[in-house]
Amino acid sequence: MEALGPSCKVDFIEFSTGLLLYRRVRKRSLSLVIKAVKDFLRLATYALFPSLLRDRLVVVGIAPLDWRVGIISRVLKHASVIYHTSWTVWDGSFFPRGSGTSMQRACWRKFLGQVPAIAAVTPVARDSLLENWSVNASALVGVVYHSYDKSVFNVLSRNSSQRDSLRQLRLIFAGRLVPEKGIESLLRIATSCPWVQLSIVGDGPLKTLVSTASTNCDNIFYHGYVLDRNELAELYRASDVVVQPSVRTGQWEELFGMALVEAMACGCVPLASAHAGPLLIVDDPEMSGFCLVDESKFEAAALAVLESLRSDSERLLDLSRRSVRIAERYERGNIAISWLELVSHLRHSVEKGRSFDGR
Image (cartoon, rainbow, N blue to C red):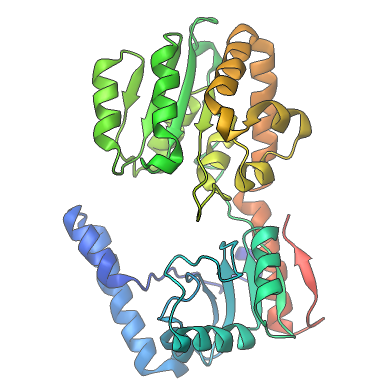
């Protein structure tokens, strides 16, 4: 946001303060507990004195049909608001917090009918929202992708010579340890391939399954939940392939996630189910045709891909370089240009209704 001027200051405030405070007390993180308390006090102040936000620019990220949108709308009634959403299913068939009450739906209709700007994380999210809800006719609506910090996620200290010739391929998975993430498929692949070294990062209901597998198999390593981004980046740089064997459910598929992008920025070749998110990110036809596979045949296809990469170090290196180039599009400095365009148009109220694409 430096481009907006030297006086520009960006604050990040979380409004699920009660739940966050509970989680952070459990994790015994004093700094995060203090942050949650400060956020609560600031939100309470703005709720009592909404005029404090007069002429301030506020970017709001809130799940569809969240009941708090009515309160937030009141708090922000004097502010210039950009609604930021990654949700892709706005047709009413599924919302993360249920279908909501008639009052909730009315509050959301009012909110979307008044908000002056909307930044969707993907074109799919943008199109679904516009097709199914009545958005402010003069609103600026476009795409602003998630971004990563290149100072953390990069290939500067990557050493491809660390790999033990062609005898071992280093895989990594980072994410929630839940069935829809394909954890069991991932473990089966690793246990059937002694020439694969699998690192797993994350937490969730399948934690015990992963932990047990790491105890029983010499080539599976469980790192738990890694909060430190620098440590996570080092794990990516020590890996050859990032694996996402995601499985669709009736209400979910893998969308645009930063884990894949951050790993690719560190030189990892993606190997993922051909879901909406990976297909959007890996748009190089040669790469997507090789690295993105049908989830119903994931294990067999993944083994074929891994065997190919294991025996062809030149191809592995080429795909690694392509991965870095693709990830570069989502680097924070590049995405900041999209934010700057939207903010500038909103501030100057020019070309009302103009759409833009942040890619």
